[in-house]
Image (cartoon, rainbow, N blue to C red; front, side, top):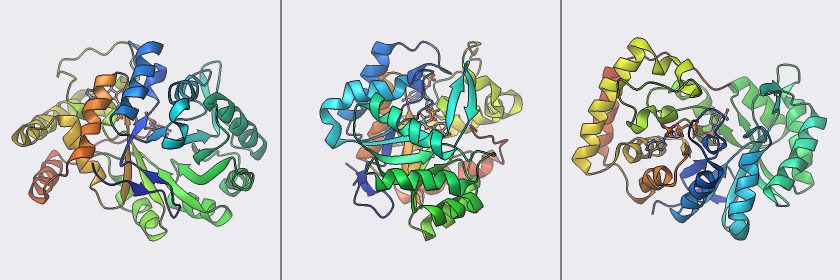
Length: 321
Ligand SMILES: NC(=O)c1ccc[n+]([C@@H]2O[C@H](COP(=O)([O-])OP(=O)(O)OC[C@H]3O[C@@H](n4cnc5c(N)ncnc54)[C@H](OP(=O)(O)O)[C@@H]3O)[C@@H](O)[C@H]2O)c1
């Protein structure tokens, strides 16, 4: 197994592959059942993953946090839970409110749903345009003093927002999107995090399933599948991405590995990346992806992949928030 990594400057240790607990809510994925979702969370733990990423707004009624509490309550001390605050649902529309009062109240509710007295990592889900980042960070600092939160994180922020947060409350983690085709953070945020010993936990390592390589070129998206709104899944981008995936598939085949393993392995071997937050909605998906924990990509294969990325050319990128 690849060694665990430190969360920021804390003594908390996490696996470089984490379980992303958004798809298990079924809000943007189709064919999701509670039973399979719970089995998927359990399968992640059984595959050696100790790091679980969720949020107050994962599920219209906090289902993701509740499932983690139900499924992993018996092994609570063996896992690291990260959840997030500052975004919630109103009539199934996502609303930003990262005011200090709201953050304090959301934390208590998350702890209740998770059936625990503390979370190891608590992120501001995204800066709220109506609230200075320092004020939201101040509320998380209060939660740390109360022992309800052990470390603070920021998701979806710029370098200026990272610095503003860090000045108000020491940051341990940053959570942006990042994968082979979306590497914008390498210019500014990633170097800032390395310099400040802030861990970078990346979402969409598989580009929402695109890089798992199981969607056929002629795949017809269900109207309820949220992916089709992203440029990566449309027109010329979709075609270029499939040509790129074909090349990756050959590289993976040469190693006797699956595509998701190869893609996630490349991600966690990138300098400065601490953990890849890998979503799944079926047990066999997370079991396959978690295999990335058991081996390392040789340097010459990394170079081959890097060349394939260069040949793919610039992409039309877009984040979640
Ligand atoms: N902070 C933020 O704003 C933010 C935003 C987004 C996500 N996140 C976090 O990051 C995590 C990862 O993002 P994500 O879940 O949206 O995307 P992802 O990890 O890039 O992709 C997950 C999807 O890929 C497919 N998949 C995964 N493993 C597979 C396998 N082995 N074989 C075939 N298909 C596979 C599944 O979709 P299908 O089966 O439907 O094809 C799965 O739902 C989230 O769960 C969440 O914890 C955070």
